[in-house]
Length: 473
Image (cartoon, rainbow, N blue to C red; front, side):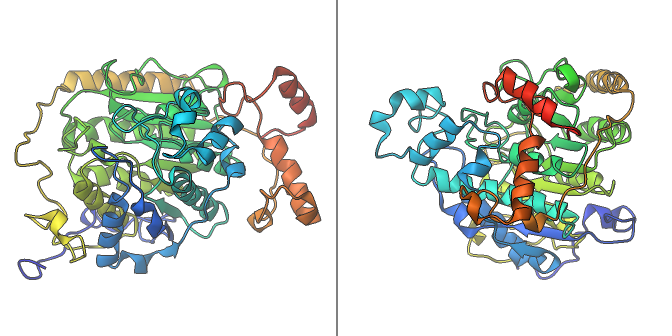
């Protein structure tokens, strides 16, 4: 370490009066950590801003700070095509399983159909190992949800996940599989209401679209919005549809928002949502492109302020799945997610970064809480006036009052999660009687009002399914 051994930097919870855990202000949370070292070995292509290698940098900092000793660490399973098809269309998943750089010339029409193409021409390029890459990060999020469900963890972390733009039948914004939707669908089997919170600089459009028609999931997104910034959605007037009206919460922000301004809207809105919606599980997407100095972002947040959002949600004591997301200056992504791992494990860590094989990436400061700007980069002006932020906050709070309390849903007792082993097997004969019973129950869980997946269900299927479901989840 450079500069000796200074006093440790305290996690936000320690600085603000004690540690906060899942069962009270003085207890620690049980944290599960999902990581597969293979995830950092994939490559989107030259000049592409998405670098899976950032996972390795973050993981090395987590190891260097010895945070793995504070968590139960798992290598996640690789999600099967059957698991992915619980949200994505069969045709799209079959396409991802078969596309490769070697056969792009004969799959041109299908590539256009699914918004996938050549590096430099499409946000979502074809690269070697595209489907195994998706299997790894999606499996991590599904496993994280299972750790929450089976009670073995209060918090589960999968920094490789959080790819919030993918749609049911197409890739979007560097995202091919929407692991967030898959994880939420798992949580909905056991929890009546799930809250999704997104602090990426980009609107979490894929997740919002998936659950726009249900009140069992509330999606909350804090993002840049001006009608032109990708993905051109997320206006405050987008509040959900049908049974999901007022369960889509969008907080549109302008360029240059800083720590104090972000806190001015984040904490009051989230406090009101927790009181009104009363979620039983939270999924938090921690996109690091909202940090200052990001290649694609336009905000001025520090690592500490980004982590303060994580700490604040943790204080509510609700089981939480924490995922990654955007972030295109990989040294800052690593700093951010290592710091938030320390926050989630209530661990004090030094501001001096631990040595690792990637030490040179963090020059010249070698600090956790460093100046995030590049040498030729200046902070953009904060275009979020106090008056504008007050107006946004008030409009969101008015919409929340339209909910008139937390939605209720009749739940059936579910069997132990151990019965789900090998549940995606196509061989019915290989399943036990209990597993067959669980599979039959799962078929009744999903229905058209649960999430929006165009053309996945026919009208007659919906009517038949409603007749068969005595107690829909």
